[in-house]
Image (cartoon, helix red, strand yellow):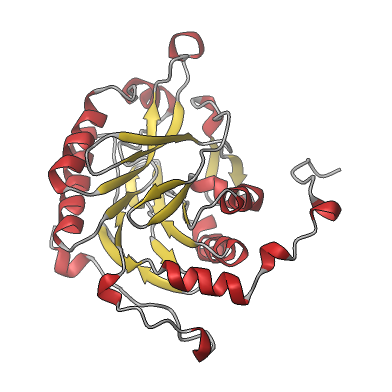
Length: 312
């Protein structure tokens, strides 16, 4: 892979739309740098690992403290039976390889959607879509199992029924302190549920991450606008590593991995094809924005606190 041709590096601060009084004087080189990786997973797990490892090593070389990989970084299978066959437990060979990679590179890894055989595998014969966070020593510091499963039929995109092979996770994960800030974990379809993002922000999240494999119809229509909306309403950074291109004859993904700042500005974006983009996380900017626009202090849970019920 020729990184000079396949990645776009961006370290913008995103102040152009803000009043000058809100601008912050922090030197950008003092701010933590994160890398967002974009890949085209296939059913070949070892080739997928080689591709991801190359991007992670490049992220480390460029000075990132944390690298984000997309949903299904491990593989994208052709059908539910192949998905179940290729899945592994968290203690399996593939996660051990990523543990060693994190230690080798000395950076944190957001593994955005691992096909996990959980403790109930023998009973259910179903897996979890598990977002795993590793620290720079390779230790698992958080696991979030996707709570909203994508069972949809989009004209022109083909039906998707994630629940055929996957169990929904039972709970949210508390935000985790990292060198870049407190991260709230989610996965792909979760971004359509603002209740989840607000819950993570209220629990202390400063960065929301939505590793994804968006389709070719919903991607152009909803991808960027949803990510920017989640950033604006929570006043968090949003990091979205994405699958791109054709995985096999049955499936393709939209790509367009990006980072959005708390004002809603896209401050980093991947170009077409596998690669990475970079962004700096300015928590002073986030705190000042929240001070000047204190929406969380203005909420009225007495009026709309009980959300989430199906439409009548």
